[in-house]
Length: 479
Ligand SMILES: [Zn+2]
Image (cartoon, rainbow, N blue to C red; front, side):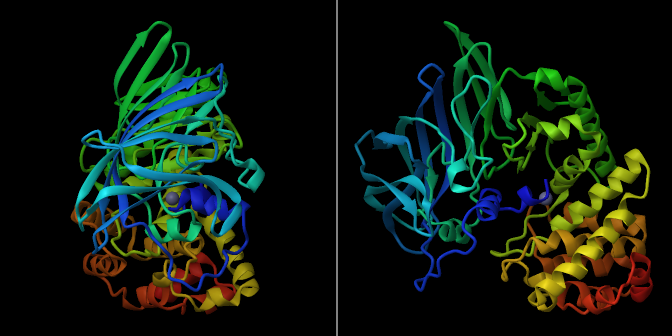
């Protein structure tokens, strides 16, 4: 889903429904030196008491340049740490208190500060065992209505958004944002009544039952930035290693989702070349109003997308991200979102027919004309600066136009060489926006200097759009 896939998924949503502006802070934003690198999670859900019991072995790495023994953690406000030990089983000192986030006081959390017995040097890692328990009651009252999370046999989701497991951060949105997305591996064992299924986008490595309870063990396929476990009476479609978890009443829609999934993967492999490694993609249905989310190897999608055939674009969009290259820029412009928007429309044309690209681009041109007048600042921010200027939402709207123009300029074959070749070359190392531009210029066989100057590094594209240019006009302009 567009809005929900803006990188800092939880945060983008939080600001959408929560505080309009963060409180201005004079001090530099505090970001935790420690970052999570591995979670080993064991959770048991007690549906009668509506309570969860968790054990986490959390491995953190000190990513800063100085030694520190301070580990800030957040948990949901009614989850309490019962014990904290180091790898040798020695108790680790910690404090926990109920408090609002610094820049969002209505959103209360259990704010935990652990003090390691010995400081952790730069680059070093430490593993802590944390036991915690308590209740999940959601955050709907703070404006994040999709966070209805609770322990309920109808539907339960365990996820990062309401800190259902320990999140390494100071209690501030600014500090979460400044830290960027975490990158970690996980192994999780979730124990629930036998009648329920635990769905996750990772690999199911074990499913064992004992005395009416079932334990589901999942391991991430690729380095993850979130781990979600949706629990309900799910049906499962499996094909070629891909999975669709669905509510029984939506089995027809789930078949369509699976067809879209396998069809899109095949199409992109043909266009952009094979995926590095073994791709296993998972789609998990969640109830409407719970907020679709994306991780590296799967998505959770609200029921509406399973019932409405016109919502396939969201799936195409997410799958296209598998062919993206990681941008090492700390504040990337995220033009990949514009590329994903363009590819989802192109895929719709390919699989369903119609004039999806032209229609979508005209719609975005109208959007740009309105919004850039309402917010004149936008007309002065080049796409390359969208991250630094904190307007990556524009990457969806301006980016789809830019890629549609590029596609028509260079033709399908060269376009696929640009996008696919860039992925094949930089998938393992990552690459910056500048490297993308250099690469595109080098394989296009034509002069794309002015095109990228106008669309990526300046806003010289804007006067054309403001004055009413259509997609065809723009292509002519840059031909
Ligand atoms: Zn996206």
